[in-house]
Image (cartoon, rainbow, N blue to C red; front, side, top):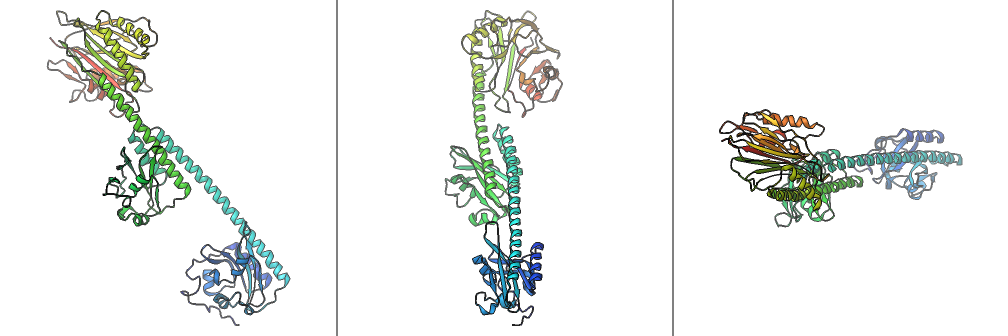
Length: 600
């Protein structure tokens, strides 16, 4: 049979014509050349099985026409199919004498004699062949077959080396990915551990999480207490994310993936937006072409909501990536649950605190005003208070204090301490220092055991000129200020005795100052003046400057100090706090109390 080069079936009908081409490989090309030279054959091929039902020829000598371009053939039409099936060598001196390998390819390549040996991988499986082909019948000698067997084994060694190298690269990539995922989890866990509010948790979920997992957009939906309603706290401009209610007929899990996640508590993974639309056709098509993941935020007892992540391109969700995202969703759920618990504790403490801060009295000739501002950072509430009482003698007692701690327990201790102090004050027979000494003893003796700083002052009756004597004692509390009718500011310095709850029986001292008509005493807790890493005197200087009419807002609407109708200064406690403490940064609650002697 005479071979005519290029005599091939049309590309549209030839087996393997639509399969991807096999690129030549230098190493396998070398084996084909060696075989062609040593056995003096016109065609030598390295055939390797592919995953698509074809064999490729990465090493080839003597292929012509379309076969030389594509280097691919369907296995059922291949002359190496028997070696691949049995794993045994196949030696045929004259192919025309057997029907074993009849195929169009054999005829087109003008195969007359064939000798093929298996190429084995690391597991011993046959993955290919090394074969020699002639265009005339040939009696293969033992020496030729030995050379072919040796070259086939060398070719197999190359296959096994590449498999081991691929496994090593795969292991290295897997280790790198595990390390990267571990670092991602560490970063997310650290960020979430620092959160104390729901808004802070959502900010981490929308920002850091999206960034660390390579997503382009993120959304967070929170479930109501019954787990029936999803409210999108932030949707990151992802279309189709409106409020969803799966308990009603209006929305069902057949319509919205987020509702299904809420109902089933199982994540949904879509490699492309086409996959989303195929399953949920009511979702808007403009969601983007990329991948979409919806993750339930699960705790032990409830589903708190859904995290939605969108990628710009197609994304494969293998087990490692799914585990990473699911773990992040779990971390977020724990942080969200903790933030809600802290918020509940803050709310309870605020309610308790407000209930204990009774309305200030309105004694003759004296104007009292106060402000309590809870902390906005962390679980910092409950320890500060102010109080005022008109005594049976007509004197006015004012108190400001700060119980150590900033939680519900501190608020409860503050309530007990305040009640004890009120009872002792009503006896109206002791000076402020004596009253604080009695309070300190009762604090320990009754089992309250509160640790607190307190400033207690008593304003006496007016003299003929309207002046009054202010007597005070300090249990470790910051000094009060007096804004004089002239606008001058005076700090009431004096010995600060020990705070309450440390050493009952320690000496305590009274101090006095004169308040004339138009003068205002300003009492406050340390949250107004203290800053981390700063000496207290800097805060005291800032307060003095504000009370003197300087600082932000001086003289304008809402200023801390404004002229009263008679021209004397009027101090507004709320404005003092707003001026000295940024509204969204203070991590301590603050109390301010002012006592003004009315002009005659």
